[in-house]
Image (cartoon, rainbow, N blue to C red; front, side, top):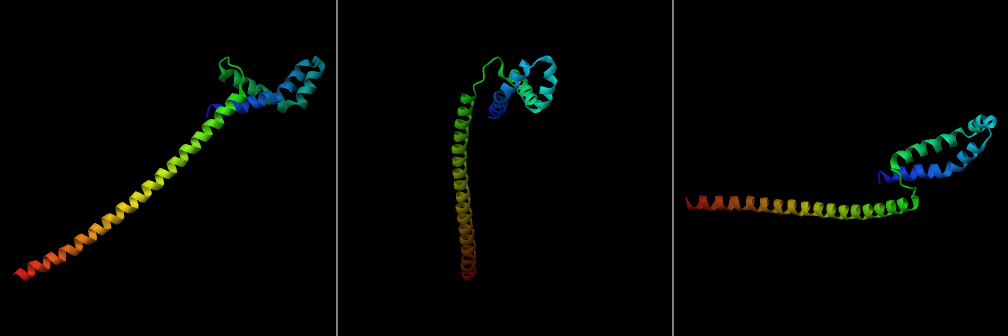
Length: 125
């Protein structure tokens, strides 16, 4: 997901501003400067997205639908795993409570047995 999310974002920017870039390239040389100034933000975003995609696609084509589908599947899997994790964590917490309760009961039982043994020992003398 860490790799797919930037690819999706940049491909969306690329596709969104591709038409502006096409119009820019169609401009006559004397109008290019004014067109560029008017659409500087869009053209800059397009160029940055194009550089990013060329560097990270390794010659593959844009496949945003498949990437979005994979991200949604991975997100659903992550949510399921996190839910299982929370259930297991709650189970461990409850086991810890039971363990401490049993230890407390056993400690109290030992303390109660010690005075009785001491009294028996004193009576025998």
